[in-house]
Image 1 (cartoon, rainbow, N blue to C red):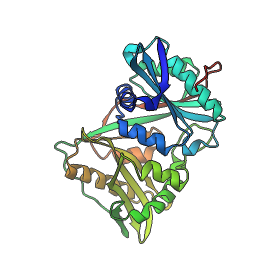
Image 2 (cartoon, helix red, strand yellow):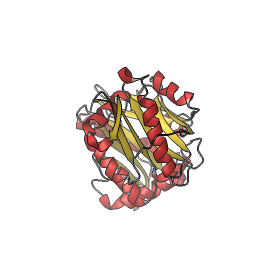
Image 3 (cartoon, rainbow, N blue to C red):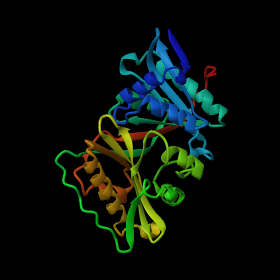
Image 4 (tube, one colour):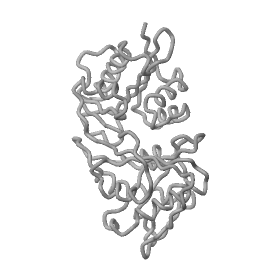
Length: 312
């Protein structure tokens, strides 16, 4: 018997399922709970088979999706419990909720090495709209890079200058829409309040590793490391953004070098990152270091289920 309950029933089980299925993107119960509160439109569910938690799903209207026909969803089922209708039932729940948000489509994420997850999306008419070239950088034995700043540019951190958070958001408003994606609306960080909740607060934030590039008193670029697996010594390059007028001058390279140096000094084991395959400039910055490929991340988009159960 498949039972679907509210995700808040067991945050530990939800986090375990997401981490097991999306094994290149670890999460924690604290993160699950935090993002549920930080995103008012988020709904999530936990699926049990004979009392055992085997699947989890969530659906949300992200800040840049308010004008989009799609909602964002994650649908994860443990490999041993697949082909038993769990994923289909969670898909129906996310579809019903997406419809209540006025949406007709879903965007779902899977790693390319999850053949079942990719097939699940493709069978339902989903198409890949973004391919993230994913990488990992093992830090053991790596030499700290030199940080070469362009003339007139200095670096600080969010920990040192928390007052610069609003300027950081302004850079994001200029840079994030430039990320290539096959969507009906460009990517966007949302309002400052939304950006603050998702990127300037919460259990993933590392203020000391959020580097801001300054030209005079103005923030012209930033790069964030966020916790992927704090206990395991893994952080992720969440975003590296530079204002258009300052691109091609070495700002991004200096920020990346500062991030790697911080990770080495702090004793981390690994950094992870990913860039859309068409984002040639960002991938060129990573190419300066011995990052090794991991399975690509795939963002799919397709229609919500046409015949759904009541998700309430």
